[in-house]
Length: 349
Image (tube, rainbow, N blue to C red):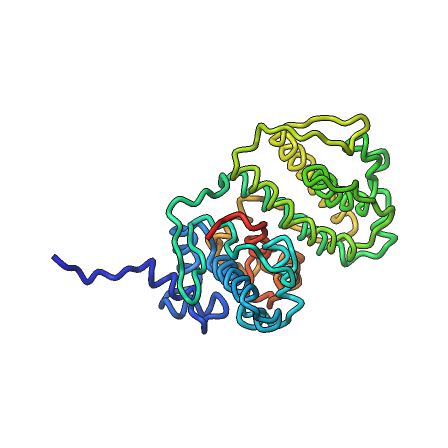
């Protein structure tokens, strides 16, 4: 017996990846659904927001085009970016290297096994191993929330960043005093730089005594994709109990990798809340950084509320998202989308 029942999920995916659908409004219109219902349906069925899925698949296609000889400008335009610079930043976050360095493969880690398959098709990988959702959410929320705080701090001058709000505040003995907002934000970024250097066998990164917010945002932008990729790699190969011998310590010490990730997340969460306290003392309005609301926005489950802090025009959360993704703020729900695809080449075509 045959059936004419529609494949609604396929229709939704077609709407996400249609060449003419450049934003969530276009995608939802193509599927004859509201933005809220469309985003929620895709997120629940595929485990990935429609904006994030489209960006990832378009970057995979761009990587394949670059391997075939396309220029960075051509790949950027084809992936829907308005500038080669914005595309290069997104590509580097995703693959861990600039587009001028050809990728050995063009697949990025996916929670649903859906990938670009040349020349114009999709490939659904049935047995793809994705990160534990809780670990993924903890790591990505930390990265997104840090970006929000750094964006909020751009409203302050150097004196405000250096003002000692908590004299004697020491989070970790070897990091020294973190009395000012600038010191707390620098420690947030530096912690991931240090542990990645140990994991990747690099030299100990140097610290800036009084870095500006612009410098910290650039450093966070560079380290975020590498950190997420490192955690995904540990998960993918089941290496949580592996030991890292850190030669950067004097004398060298060994650490269980799972404890390293837990260490970074624990003290990052503390520092983010301390940073919120200091920002509020400087008169900057910030939300509470609740991961529940972050995940709802990521999945498109939170309806836009005119008066809600995360959606207010000029809010640092929206500004961080727009700048990280090189997009119009009105097309983004949260900074989560800016880091959705940050990973090294984890999947294999």
